[in-house]
Amino acid sequence: MTGSTTSDNDFALAIHGGAGTILRSKMTPEREAAYHAGLRRALDAGRTVLADGGAALDAVSAAVMALEDEPLFNAGRGAVYTSAGKQEMDAAVMDGRDRSAGAVAGICGPRNPVLAARAVMEHSGHVILIGESAMEFCRKQGLAFEEPSYFFTEQRWNALQETLAMRNSGADDQDESRKHGTVGAVARDRHGNLAAATSTGGMTAKAPGRVGDSPVIGAGTWADNETCAISATGHGEIFIRYAAAHEIASRMRYAGQSLEKASHAVVIDMLAPAGGSGGIVAVDHAGNVSLPFNCSGMYRGMVKGDGRLLTAIYDEPLVDFGRI
Ligand code: ASP
Image 1: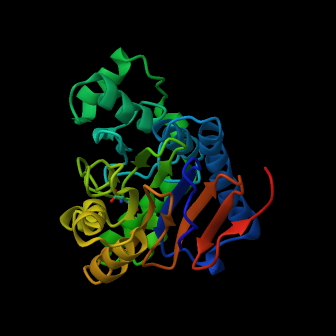
Image 2 (image 1 turned 45 degrees about the vertical axis):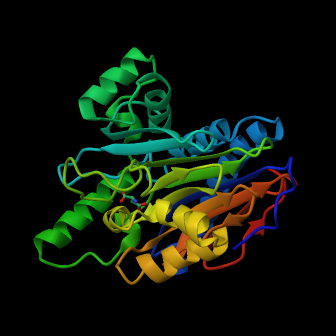
Image 3 (image 1 turned 60 degrees about the vertical axis):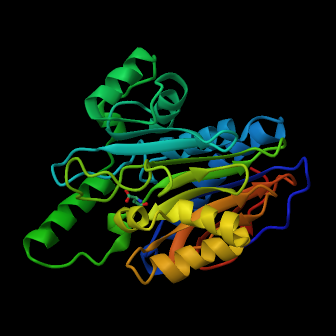
């Protein structure tokens, strides 16, 4: 879906809370309303920054923090479990002004992994820090930490048990909703700058130490003022192998494709046939927004300068539920 072009001093923010086989039949009206509310809170957090003339980088950080704090989504609080019953979170941020980037992988402790990624970008001199050393760095940076009980949700724990039981019985787990999830945000601020942020617990029952596409710059996260900002969600291994986010930016840069054309070509024509189920949220330098996905649903939303918080879950138009 493409929004109208943003005027020069207007802003645009798009978010996702994961993609996959999201079936209406498995959703209660209460749960559906909770997802919309969670998305709207995140949009509102980012909108507040952008409406004040704040930076895209601050807006995507604020939106992703709100999604990480919401246990319904697979990032921060509510992250999924590895096959060893631990949570290992990945996150990244990228600033389209100068392509500075920061990421963390395999961490559990910092309350908001997106802030850990941002600290790496701003204070480490590196792009990616992992595991225990990343957490040591975060402690030194004074980031807020939480106990494992803060991140625990019964739903994710049960999903792990079901996936492991299926794996042990030799069955293939077809339920994508049990496997997936990630949160992310992209923004274009009033100064024309772009930024992206992505945060995830990864995939349920992943191998300990497995890192997905979210913290891999150019795969699950990308921002460059000249082209676009992208945050992806889906089968990370495929998104990495196809350098999904960077592929979209390259099509715009070298083939002159529009954001809409490039993002559809990658998500629908390239990733889907390769088994890369999922989707992306994207914004370009002109403030166009594109939200393609190649599965039955993606928790998603967007807001522009008119302040309307638009959200959707299934293959359906975005809906405005009125003011928060
Ligand atoms: N892309 C994430 C990963 O592979 C999972 C997801 O978005 O569903 O870690």
